[in-house]
Image 1 (cartoon, rainbow, N blue to C red):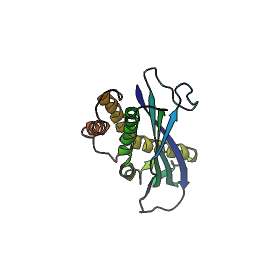
Image 2: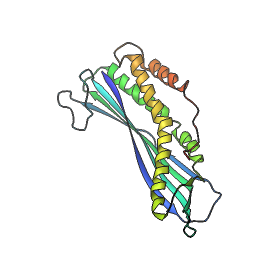
Image 3: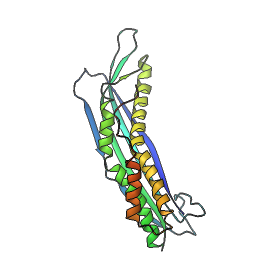
Image 4: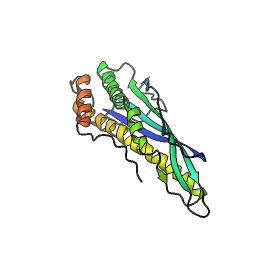
Length: 219
């Protein structure tokens, strides 16, 4: 009856640098407050930008976790030898957008259930900056594998993608698992289990078996 969409995407900005070596481990994490957009719709005339509903669904919630990272590197060219490139700074922007689609004149139960999905997403986003900062530590000073000048840019993009994948794996993935558990506990909002209790149980079911965030980057 009700389902949760979790959309993720990468925004990658690369910034090669030829500056001198530095001991300043420059990590900047900017987390913007989550944005929530609750939209009502006429079931007989659904908006074109609304996600499709299955036959047994009345409403839907979309949560989009975004990771944008700017990577600054130091590159040194010595004759015909491979270009020595290492990461010297990371600037990361994190965001969460939630859209709740509920039918006009719907029941309080359906509204409460959909809002429960929003609360779960925000719960996992709460410490997203700390998670990203921990992951970023192992990227500072990391040497990238490059053969020549032309392969520097692709190497930076690869590192940026790996960073965002690690971040989303530590934040978005467990959030999605908790969303599925929440729907299981509430039978997609059809039973009488109170939403606050279901939210707590769903989050605890994931966090109790969740390993501690790792700062190990792929090398």
